[in-house]
Every structure is written in C-alpha cells, then in structure tokens.
Length: 418
Ligand code: MEV
Image (cartoon, rainbow, N blue to C red; front, side, top):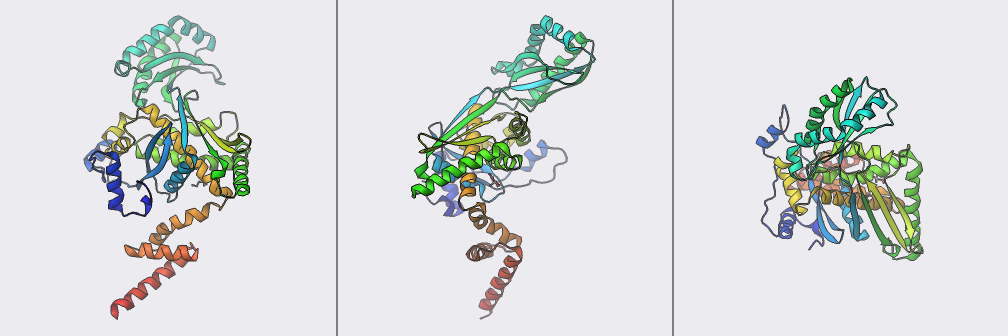
C-alpha cells in the first residue's frame, strides 16, 4: 500500500491515507481562527508547519502510520527508513506520574519530617478531595514525601500525581496551590512556591529494537563494519558531551515531530529529557547500540521520559492534533508515549547509520534542494526543475541556485517568445 508513497501526487497521498483510516475522516488543513483565537492571548494568525507521515513502523507487533509535524526535510524519510530496517520495535512504559513541588522556607528538615509523619494521610486525603475530577478518572495524588537532597535551607514536599491521559499540569498545579497553605501553616513557615516539576525520573519508556546485521548491507564485511561503527559512535555519545547533544538532537527530531503533530507540550518533554540525559552527573546519549548473538545482531536500547497527553489542554480543541491521534488509532497516553519512544529510536538508528556510511549530507541535501530552490526565489514548477539541477550538479550553494534559476527563466522566456 505504501510502495513509492513519497513519489505520488499530494491528492493520491491524501486518498491513500483516507483509505488506510477506513473512515472518511476529512483532513483538517487549517486550524480555524476561532479555535486559535481562544488558545492564546493577542492571537494574530496561524504559523504553519508541514505535517507528513512516517511509514513502515511496527511497534509492539502492531503497524502504525506516524504523523509528524516538522520543517526539517530529511526527518520523515529517515524515520521511515529506520523503521523499515529495524522491523518490530519493543516499547514499554514504566510508570507515568508527575511530581509537584511545594517548597517551604523557614522550617527545618527535621520539623518538616515530623509533621509529614503526623499529617501525611490527612494532607493526601485533602489533595485527593480537591482533585475529585481526575480521581474520578482513576488518577490524582499518589504519594507525599520530602525530597532530602536539597542543598538549600528550603524543604521540598513532593506530591506524586497520576494525570491519567492528560498532561495534568492544570490539575496538579491547582491541587498543589490548594494543599500548600495547609502544609505551610503546620510548618509555621513561608511558601516559596507550589508548582509541578517537568522532571520525573522514575517515569520513562524503555524501548529496544534488534536488527540482524546482514540487513545493513549485502556485503557481509561491509555490514559488519557498519554495525561496529554504529556501536562505536553510540559509545562515543556516552563519553563526549558534544556528540551526546547531537546524538540526542537526532532522537528529538523524531520525538518532537510527533509531539507537535499530536498537540503535546514539547517544551516540557524537551526540558525533562535533557535533565534525564544528565542524571548520572554527565550529559550522555539517551540510546546505546551493542552487538549481540555472536556479533550477528545489532541491538539498540533507549530509556526516555515522555510526559505526553491524549486528552485535555489545547489538543482537544486543535483539529489537526485530533486528526493525528485518530491516525494513530486514538491511543491512551501510555501507548502514545511508547509510540513516540519507538520513533525516537528509529530516528536515532537512521542518523547513526547515515553518519557511519555515506555521511548525513548525501541523503539530506537532495531533500534540502527544494527548500534551497525556494530560498533562491523559485516558484511553482521552477522548484522541481531547479532542485533537480542542484541534485544533478551536487552543488547546494545558494549563489549557484540563483544562477541556475536565472538560466531556467531566461530559457523559458526565449521559448515563449519563439
Ligand atoms: C540532524 O538533524 C540530526 C543528526 O545530526 C543526528 C546525529 O548526528 O545523530 C544527524
């Protein structure tokens, strides 16, 4: 069904996606101004990003077509290639809770601990009572404890919270703000703040995929070298922060594009992910690739925190986010996190494979050529013509693109005058 999808005309691609969805779900090409105007203050107009689909994904033995909103030309192609080579990707979520902080000043740690012992269940019950809505969906406050590794004079009471399928920021923040005065009064202290944290290191997704190395090249020696080089490059990202950041940027290319398509808060995820990548005290690559089964298999594993939602917030009033979630089969938040982690791993695999073989530019530049053509001023059919010429010449300088565009225009003027 997907063979040569990228070469088909836009109308055919849209039809194929509708056929795949088996329901006549109209593609919402615009975010209505009325909705957008309700979403933010001082709204003026919509800022668009292209949304496309990554194909060939099999996650936990189920096929998926993945919506991705992104401006970088090679990301969707790379994700699809990565997924095709990897085959089934195993992805399992471990915990999904938020942590909220009530930070109190002018109280000693010992006194705060005594008070927590006395009032923990009373405070928790109160927190549950004020979070009735989310409790009725099976979530809400789970535990209240003190985080001791503060290195400050403040005491931090932490509330762990199950947001069910929502991002949960509003629910937990309201709960924290309502609970805080009771805690502060008992402490006879002063409130510094009550707010959720975007860091929840016990909530993450474990994702892995294995690929027989003979799938990396027909030539067995070459396949072995590619696999070995992928392992070395991923090891390098464990010890070198410069490489680790770029390694993780490649993962986030996939992660962020699905977060955007599904209307999720990508800033929250980004902040949490990079803190998580530094949890050992050094910033490291999130994924690692190793050789297994007598060196015949390349295995990638990744642990990544992904606080994502499938209901609530602005995603409920965003028709394009709703369309993306429908394309994914209306997943619960846990399943969406597993999907996104799998996309991140496939994206990482595709990047590492390209880096240790042809280099990134060979695959990247032909896709970049269309943007370059537009940057040079090409419009309509000129874009395809000019980008073809740039690819043929393997020259991606803007100055050359402008020269070629002049030539294209000059020859078409002459043809029309003839
Ligand atoms: C480019 O957007 C992402 C890469 O730099 C990732 C990587 O180097 O692993 C290709």
